Image (spheres, rainbow, N blue to C red):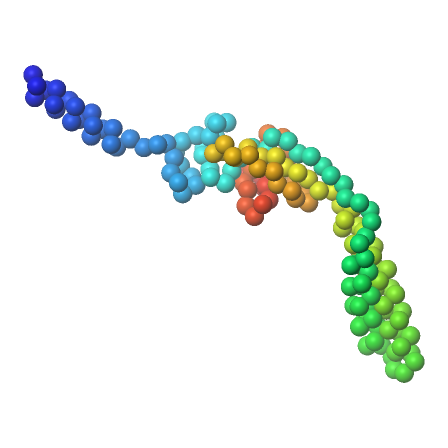
Length: 149
């Protein structure tokens, strides 16, 4: 009788040692995430998306860079006083263009994407584009950006 109990205990311990936790640490596994999806270390579900619009003002950096580039390009045209005039005109045109570009970039919408990861972590990712994301979308997060799966 004791031999049967010891054999049964040994078999039970052997089988328990073979059990797995359901997923591996390499990122992909056999278990499921809370939403019923296959577990993925870098994947999650979008909870919500908030849109922010930047100011339609420029700080001046774009105008300065534009003026320098325009001046350099203008100095390559003509000779003598014509070269001087082209340099000034290039600097002015470059400054105006740089100012407009900076203003447009700052005024573009920015999105805060709230994601609940498969492992339970919650992230807020700020990005300029959201592709085709919406609430409830499955995403993969890499480089602080959420992209649809």
